[in-house]
Every structure is written in structure tokens, then in C-alpha cells.
Length: 224
Image (cartoon, rainbow, N blue to C red; front, side, top):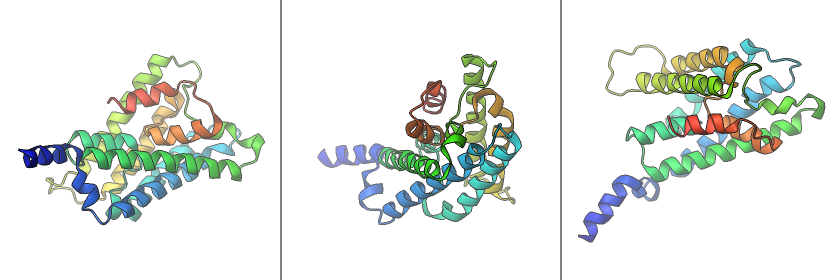
């Protein structure tokens, strides 16, 4: 009876994924580094601008994500996004403990990346360090709805192109995901800042201690 209960708990928690996986520390380090670099490079394309240049920001995030996926995808899967990790947990691809550890190191990596970025940028040019926010003239509801659509699109593309059951995919999955990220930013920046990644929004918010409308990205990404 006790063995059955242990096996039942392990099937949900995934303790064996942590205790019996010798590569777990490499996976956590990869997620930390990936999210750290995403924030430094992605938000770095924003902070020195006198105005928001949507094409440059979209291209930067859209290029950085697939590049990181090619670099660390074989180590951790290159989630670098708590929304991605939660969606993989919800679909049974990873267990609870691994998901929680991934999310923790992603958030820490984002805060670390934001802290380093702030050190590199002159104070007068920080421009809120790339914090995502509702656009001028956009209501909270409009920004919320846009963020739902953008996050759904990104997760839909990720699960579609990474489905191991598909035999028809001949192109590059990281490229498709990168293009989806670019499309989300090109469309969504004027509405919600196009977070599509709670870690990316969390890091700058912590360092700048600015939480205005932060509920939009947190509620969307942790509930979709």
C-alpha cells in the first residue's frame, strides 16, 4: 500500500525526475543562463532608445529565442519562460517539481539579467528597463485580451512544432517559434508591451520596483 502511494505521488510530483536525474543541475543552469541572456539582450534593445522601436524590439526577441533554443535546447528544452513550463506541465510533458524548479531559476535569471542590464545602462537612459505596460489609449481589458491571444499563439506554435508524434515537419522548430515571438511583439507592443513571458516582465519590475499593470501578464500567463 505504501509503495503504491509513493508511486502515485511520484507520478504527480516527479520526485524521481529530480533525485534520479544526474543532469537536473545542468538543466537548471541552462534555464538560468537562457533567461538571463534573453532579458539582457531583449530588454537591452529597448533601454537606450528615445522611443519604442517596435521592429527592432520584435526582431531582437525573435532572433534571440531561437538562437538560445539551438544552444541549450538539448540540455533543458530551452523553456526560458514560465508560461511554456506551465503549459508543458499541464500537458503532462514534465512533472510538478521540475516545473517549479524551472520557474524558480527562470525568475532568478530574469532578475539577474535585469540587474546586470541596469548596471550597463546610464541612469537617464534606463526608460524603465524595458518594463511591459499597457499602451497609451489602451484599456486594461484590451491589453489583457491581447496578452491572452499572444500567449496562446506562442504556446500553440511551440506545442505544434515540438510534437514528437508529427512526422511531417521538415523545417526548423526554433525558427518557427522565433517567428511567432517576432509576430507577437510586432502586434502586441502597442497594446500590452507584448510580454508573453512572465519572467521577462518580472525581472525589470523587480529591479525598477515598478508593478503598474503587472497583474495583466501574471494573471494571463499563469492561468491560460
